[in-house]
Image (cartoon, rainbow, N blue to C red; front, side, top):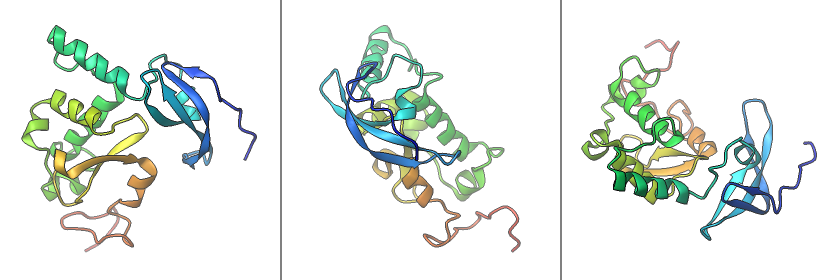
Length: 188
């Protein structure tokens, strides 16, 4: 592994890097980015990888910036204003997996009867507010606690992608494949 540039003391948006905190999982290219402990201007602490911090944008925060943005939108009566954001992308992907038969993951979700609770299905803003109040950050992904349960507040949490990969249904050592899910290329 190459030498890591020390980012301690550098400021990225609202985040100030306190120090290195290990390394993240390998990415598709086989690289591992350093993880950094950061202090947000609001006083909260969070962890980000080098690649996340170095993205060319000025809106890095612990999540407080998005909460403030939602508060401003509520005052201006904006639906959710998060179109194009990673969090809204998570919402759209969840909906597609459950309700769009052409989605590549539909067989493992919608076809098996996995749905999105009415509160979230009919109101993206409710999902966004829940996510921000329950630990969402750009380096996490939504996880259903009970893999056979629906997407709903009591059955969802936010975890790192490295943990999500361990829970894939196709990981036969972890759990059996429920019907009607079938891996491509499998014959019954």
